[in-house]
Amino acid sequence: MESNEAKLVRLTAWSCIVFVVVFALGWGVLGRNIPPYPPDMPADELASIYRAHASTMRIGFAVGAFSSTFLVAWAIGLFRIMVRMEQGSQLLSYTQLIGGVLTGMVPLFACIFWLTAAFRPEQDPALIRLLFDLGWLTIDIGFGVTILQYCALGVVAIRDTREKPLFPKWLAWLGIWISLEFLVELIMPYFRSGPFAWNGLFAYWLPFFGPFVWMIGVALYMFKATTRLTEEHESERSAAASGLAHH
Amino acid sequence: MGADRLAPRPPSLPGDAGFWTFIAADATLFALLFFQFSLDRSSHVAVFGAGQRALLVPLGAVNTLVLVTSSFLLASGIRTAHRRDVRRATWLIAGTVLLGVVFAVVKITEYWIELASGHTLSTSSFFMYYFVITGIHLLHLIVGVIALVIIGVRVRRGSGARQDRLLLECGASYWHLIDLLWMFIFPLLYLAR
Image 1 (tube, rainbow over the protein chains, first blue to last red):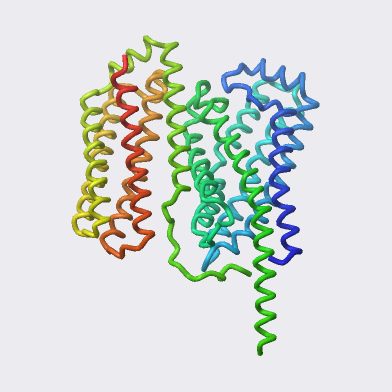
Image 2: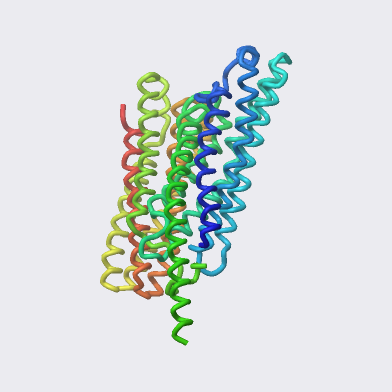
């Protein structure tokens, strides 16, 4: 990897960390989604919360929606590392790229739905709740493209034939597992309370905070990978130069 | 570009220590499910007791026997494969696959009977856990059966390649996890009073 590209890829690794922090602040803290309001909360109660905190929630969801930009940039940088790991066709690298770009659309739209609820909080509480539900169902059911992203990275990282792989295999397997755990969301719409509801252990705490931690792990190994790929490039170039000198 | 820098090796998923991270994460998921189940049971003793009495213990017991036998066959299959007795190893893996299919058929029959008698995901918190825990377990088993079919075909080809051996060991670890999880699910859901 040439040093100019390595700089940009490092920037996308930072972008991943920025996404996690900014999204957690906007969507989670200012948007009041950590922990989420339960699906069985009465519409009046929900509307009064949106009315009381409309201004902070608007900033939170606008920032949360914007943070998806950083998620998309991360997928592009990861793609540039993956094309140097994947042998033959680069199908899985492209799968990761497209899966990652589309994953960015999920928090984007979900935050816009919640933002719409906070935009006119004085309206009918039933409409507030409708938009609130729409936001949660979007962010929870939109996981399919993320499975593509995590599994594609996982398979390529596991198949990496380097003596010391660029991404550790445990991180690759963990990503595959985290993405498959998203499938529990398929039963989330059956429940308005309990561990499988959108505020429960299996539909909220695991599928949201698992990926956050894993993504930071991937970003840290991206820094190491760019350093190693730059060194590989340098040693290849000097080998080629000495080869030329022989002739 | 360093993409084609290294000596070509047929791409394959090597079974190594990394796979155990997957197993550990998966076991943790089930541990959390069992923990939530036990927590909810302690606060809804009557509901959980009534639900448990409606389960078909003989079918659960049959499936326990089926899985234990399948694990035994697979363990013998691995030993046989390590001795390069390809024919026998293939039969033992095929036997494991067949028992996996039997387990799935029994389980789906059980779901059929439960649904016909009006027990669904939303009947009670007991049946929510019953369908979700056994359903996630059944999904694992179906993935395991597919993996064993692929592994069986590779073993039958008998290349003896390092990757094939690792794949077989990975598949077997995963299959034993499925068996082990059922050893928790059966007593916890069907038997524990």
